Amino acid sequence: MVSKSLSLLAFSLMACGTGMPTGSNQVFSPASNGSSSSSSSGGSGHGTSSGSSTGGIHTLLAIHNVTSQVTGTNVVINWQTSIAGDSTVDYGLSDFGTVAHDASAVTAHQYTLASMAQGTYQFRVTSRSPDGQQVSDAGAGAGYRFTIVVGPNISAVDSDFNVGTHVLTVTWSTDIPADSRVDLGTTDYSLLSNVDTKLATSHSLTLTLNDAGSYIFRVVSKDGNGVSVINNNNGKGYPVTVPGIAVQDGTLAHPFIIDASSLPITYNDNQDTDNSGESSIDAYPPATNDEGGAEFIYTFTLKQPANFSGTVTDAVGVDIDIMLCQSLAPVELFGNSTTSRADTTLSNILLPAGTYWLALDTFVNAKTGTPVPQPGPYSLSVSITAP
Image (cartoon, rainbow, N blue to C red; front, side, top):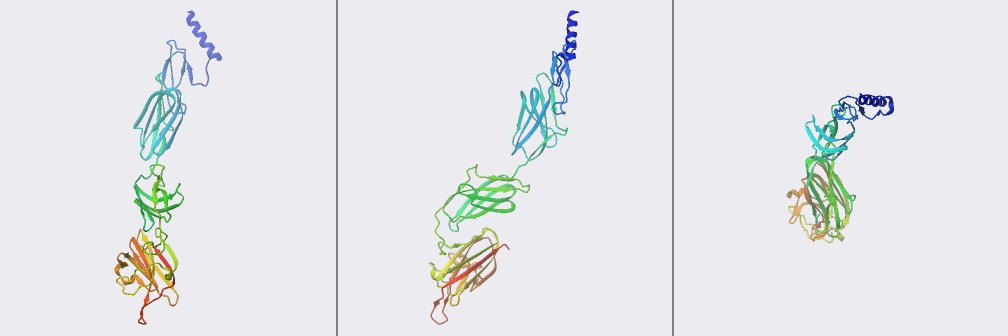
């Protein structure tokens, strides 16, 4: 009888405020069998907790501060619990069918889901305490959500530098259609860039490098959803070494380069064949005209079909002809046709992708019976446009 009276007295004192905890997710049970049970909606209002304890004060398990942080294809899920418990994440694209579990009893929970496929996922978190309480939190009920966006995968990055044309060609592949960009520099990527906005899986871009030295480049592709991926060789950049390049002087060995890497282009130049260091081509088959005077040579490379037009203007007493060639070894006019030679103008010649040469050569006049070269100053104007 004395023991029972003391128990009742203790309960009465606590109920009157001398020891009853408030606002702490705890309950006190006066049950004669020494057990207690409780339930809770959890710290976020979505979880439930149930369990029992052998004693007077029972702390409820509650979940709060559920967050997710996506980095690339990985997501880190964090939450906290009022008392230590294990960690379970149920997730999926349309349900909670995939389960990830960590048995460690902690109050600060973190679970990383790695290498996730693209999509919007729903998830819920669950913790179970050592005393048997279990709480689940699924946000508003349909599950918390995170989204994984996977950009194009870049592979097979390669490059080739053509010493003759001074053109660097960079190629790579992507697993899904994406655009193309290459950035180049000496210590960063700010010196030169080239962009092709067409979506493709095979990529090829060119840059013209006239200065000898060491360079690095990176490639960038952006898919139709606007997701960009950079491949910079794990932060090192892809190296390119450009050897010493002779000054362009319009000779066969070092022709003037017309940069046609991005269309449309216009090109203008002024020269004087009296100052030319080249006079090795006298005819341009199948044309039979005598071009035995000095000449200047130009070259350009097309990465796609294009329309070519070129005009040469010279003074009275000067006769400089224009020839569009598909080869200089052997010398051959484009299309093996005399229409690729003109006294003044070549108009709208459709060219397939490839490398071409322009010869601005001095005509030899033999009308008086004695061949007389007619060298002198000229102006060249070139237009290359997409068809």
